[in-house]
Image 1 (cartoon, rainbow, N blue to C red):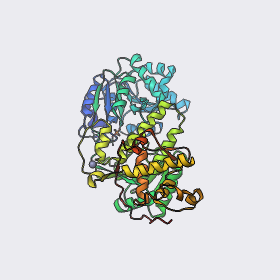
Image 2 (cartoon, rainbow, N blue to C red):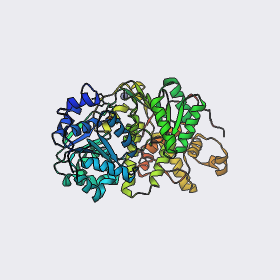
Image 3 (cartoon, helix red, strand yellow):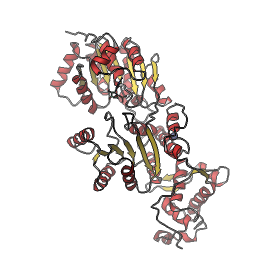
Image 4 (cartoon, rainbow, N blue to C red):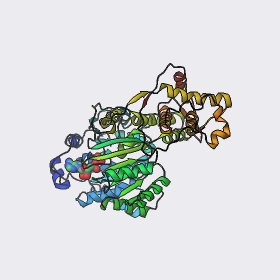
Length: 529
Ligand code: ADP
Ligand code: ZN
């Protein structure tokens, strides 16, 4: 017999105290819960750790019926449901990891009104059978978690989310709440459009995380730099180190362990049992460092993560913000540290060029990368840059590397012209192209087997850049790439000009560059010809 789960509490405050044991609402939680409990729709933009879950869990306890939570993270459903059961909320999930018997039990409980909350994966709502099943019970609300996944412009698009727009038509009287921790203006608009949340109230929290200190350094020896950073600033702290490749996570964890740190690798290629053990050691032991691909961290609620380090450039500002947001949920001072270099730009531009999607897809990825590069190369406050990306104006924070140690920008037009004309001449005179390393050697007049092999000492631009160091030249190349004044093409990242670089060569455009602090370990690599 179909029955509806009756309301469990009369007021939101009662549910907050009794079930979750909290004193008061945080930020806009109270208003959001009021809106949804009264049957209205809501769009909630709140940073990681802001407390989004209560915004749908409590309304589900106040309304008749079951709250349906749509979440793409199957791995997390289990944890969330366990946590709810532990505090007496009748919760369950339906996903592909269950056998038929388990599923049938959950389905029966739903239809008979024995569930306050039911978590399901978005792909289930694509099927007519699942929708018909849901119609057999009473729905208190729909909560669409990670709602940015509906955005084709976003960094985490999931096609299954598109069909969630139909919920409005099928269940016009059921309130819907869409939640996300990543929200540019464009994503925000897309969530409203595609999920048919035209009449929803919008709740936009500040995305500032004042206790996180943002720092971006130029990368030369990433592992050593990372080790120095951890040793000097976070010797016994828990932290997450992000890298792009599985191999890098393993090598880096090994290197940190060899240097006496408690570091573990984590990526999707490791066996599930090992991943579970790593995650639980990170949560339970003190001072564990996990070196991971982005597969790690979603939904991990560890309040005292003291640092998040990136040793490879994240692909988007959204991703960077989400990953760094895992630091300092307890509000205590924490560090977001990123090392980034020329190779990152070369590699990511190449990955975009070779990516299988259509042109529009590549353009989106390029736009994401450009925004990330702009954050890395800014001479202004990192936080101002970050928040303005999310459409939130702010003033210089005084707690990021550029505020604490303002970088000097200098007129790099002449060095840029030297570099660009070296590339042009190689192409015109010899039909050759090279990666940044060879170009820098030519500019500095540094004889190597490769410059001898190609007779590059005879080029007119040989040695015209001896006034700058190796590292400074690599900084010039990196920044020209970041500014779109150079392109890196092909498997080897050979440098070529862009339309904009001709303006620099002709003198029609000047180039502002960020000063590269000299690294202490720089080897002398003077002119040896
Ligand atoms: P999000 O989903 O936005 O990342 P969560 O819902 O997981 O955030 O909440 C983050 C943490 O804050 C959790 O540990 C949660 O229990 C806690 N929290 C949420 N709301 C409150 C509140 N009103 N008072 C105290 N702690 C809260
Ligand atoms: Zn700042």
